[in-house]
Image (tube, rainbow, N blue to C red; front, side, top):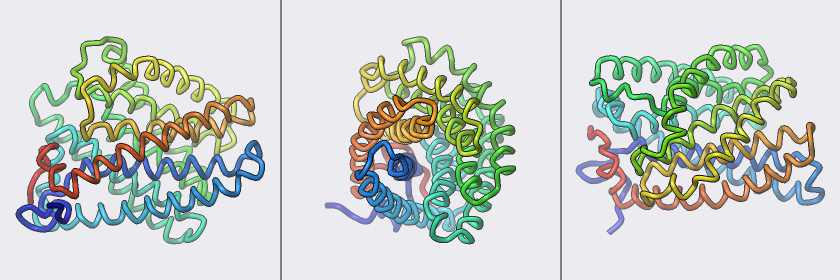
Length: 328
């Protein structure tokens, strides 16, 4: 019988951080739809796409708020539970997706409530900063296996760049530039450390979906730099993102060979971010609209499927045990 998410042993005592990556993907999908609706390429379809985008963003923001409330209820019961969640991979990636989701939610509400958006952006950046420090502390104090390079480090240490999208919309280009400059060195290091796993075929099956996270920073730098008017630099990152996407696309069977797990949440946001990046490169060549349209359709299917499966596991109180989420 279905029950309130995480209600086994007490309401929301085991709220799993793994709920946040597909919600992040849903918010990213909404922003990609918004970008698509702004293109004259679609003609009269643009208005309909824009309407769907706002519906998706509204649903994503509400769902994010509910999931955040559920995790905060767990955190308030026993604050130290966050350190226990950070000991495991789904916890580290999930909590990073949470703080990144806060910044994407800010971008979604900016046209309607700019003051609230400013407060949300500051809160999201502050929360992600605290999380990055905690993750670094856990990694340094933990066993050596915990420090094995992971694509998830992009979320933990480079995820600040998501705030650049909202910063540009809020009229703070210098903040967006600062986020690019501060995070890019870390992204380059993580790309370098992850190159071996990216090229080899010996990564355990259940962890392979995380390789998709390598795509996200390249797409986000493309988006932020394009919004800042630096279309030439954005084009360079866009080409890099396209090469990563092609490499991953050619090996999609290998990536998904272990079957569905909650880590499939890693498939959602990078695909949506890729669609947004391609749409913003349309001024360079109209062909990017076609690539972005294909990625957008894929993001709709993948995000819908993964979000449904993860929400169902959460509703059945199975997601927490499956991902070893800490209990308050």
